[in-house]
Amino acid sequence: MSRRPARCAVAVLTGALALAGCGAGDSAADLSVSAAYMPQPVSDSMAAGFLTVTNDGDTADELTSVTSDAGEVTVHETVDGAMRQVDRLPVPAHGRLALQSGGDHLMFEKLKRQPKQGQTIAVELHFADSGPVTVEMPVKPATYRPTAGD
Image (tube, rainbow, N blue to C red; front, side, top):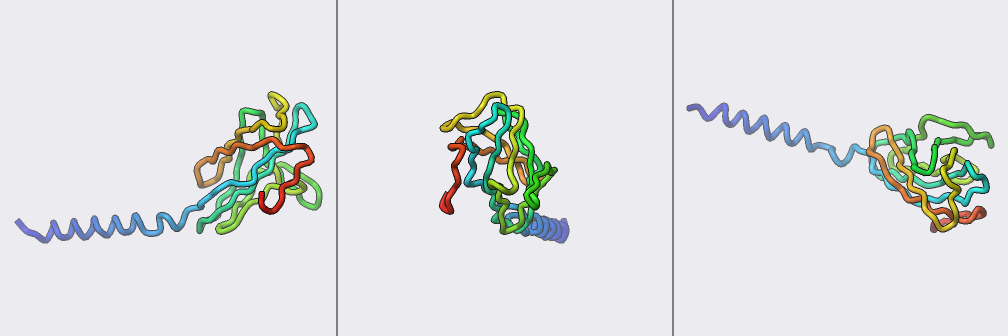
């Protein structure tokens, strides 16, 4: 019995394992969500939502949709004071996507019930490449404005 095929198989297997692990943790987006809130809506059927998605990874991703049991949720961008629905918003590598009042935001429509201050609304963020992220969004006073530490 020759030892050469066994040594080749071990070398090939070792090389394959090294390649499989190469950069596995370095190339993916590493997403986290903070500063999520919904101002208490003044409308029975519509509301806005705000949050920040931070990407500590080496790869950019995109927010492609948001779902919630509270109602329909769409993603909007604001350009020169005009808002419009978009299919996706970028989350840059080593950067963040800030959804904030007066800027890009989530729009809740056809609310099943009007959220009240002190309640939370669960949303699931969907991304082009990363898995979904579930966020509990607290309902704040209608006039709430986060500070830098929020």
